[in-house]
Length: 217
Image (cartoon, rainbow, N blue to C red; front, side, top):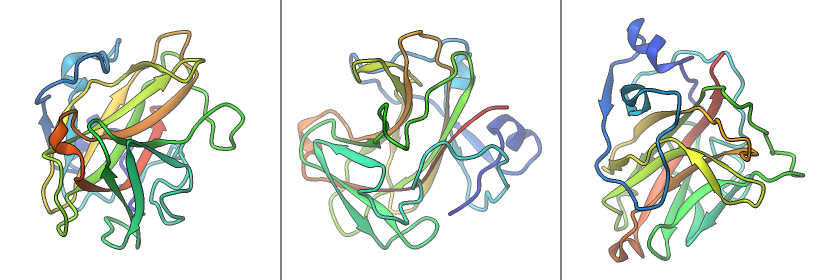
């Protein structure tokens, strides 16, 4: 699995990576609000260029983010199917997400009582990295959304990073988002990669790999 820089700001300032800000293309109605406490520019997803191998000191807060143990370990689909794929960004395995309906997603399987459960610390800035691409051998959705969110005590959406749609290509593209939870009802961090919310998305597939989540020191 690839290692990640400590923060986008540091990485860009120190010239560890070449970064480009990718502003939202459109938003899904009723999905996520902007993360409170972070300004609009820092909320924007950052696309990372190839060759980003700088180390990250904080531990990855999620399990099996590189999918080397298979898609069914620590991850769950919604209106989608998951299958191991040998076209990997790092390591030998990625996860193929095939949408069975509009708005399908892959998300971390984190609930109270599970070994993977990680409670949030309110006010802390969290980072998420994920790499995505079209499979190349199947129809792909036109775009996907990489998002870090939190769920409330009932398991429903509480708050999260802004919805920002990224165009898929046949090459790997890696994105970083930031999220600062502030609501008392939030109970856990949930990294999620979502397909588009239109009927044509059903039956399309995308690949995801090397998901990491960490707290900014």
